[in-house]
Image 1 (cartoon, rainbow, N blue to C red):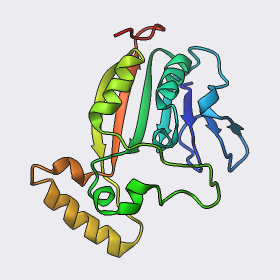
Image 2 (cartoon, rainbow, N blue to C red):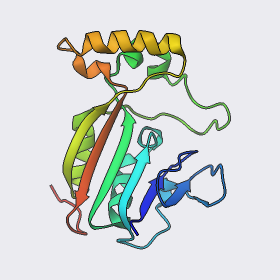
Image 3 (tube, one colour):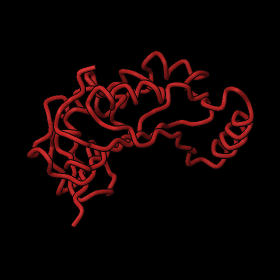
Amino acid sequence: MKRILNVGCGGDTYGTDFVDLYPRRKGVIQCDIERGLPFEDGTFDEVYSHCLFEHLKNPFNMVVEMKRVAKIGGRVRLITDNGSYWVFALNNRAHTGGYEKEAHPDDRHYCFYTKTHLAHHFRKAGLEVEEVKFVEYFSTSWQKKAACFIIQNLLKLTPFRNMAYARIEITGVKKSQARSLD
């Protein structure tokens, strides 16, 4: 059976094993990723995280830990906010820290990333970058969804196409246990 670790899972049920700082359901291990993952080296076929990376003070440590618990030949897949997204550029609150979660005042967004930033993190950790792509995201409100759809599709026709996407997904493959020294 393929084992998939979901790091910072929140309410997401993708995977076979789950860790989160604030577990919302049974079966999720409470874990502060800033201190490491509570698993042996080479345990998982895939290590996945969705919208956690931007919340970390030391995001590189997360990539190193994700790689550590992945098997040789396993994948590390991460989705995070796109620092170039048009909504972030227009919404001053996004760049000044005004969208933290009320329920957890210590939960902050520390940084936004580009495709290049993420690739640098993965390569430095010793992961072979397999794919980096933009991911579309639409609000649940039909009005916002319609507005986003129109603006995003217009942006895709311009030199500012990177601004059309809210998220970036990167996938890397673990070829060895060693970390890159470059």
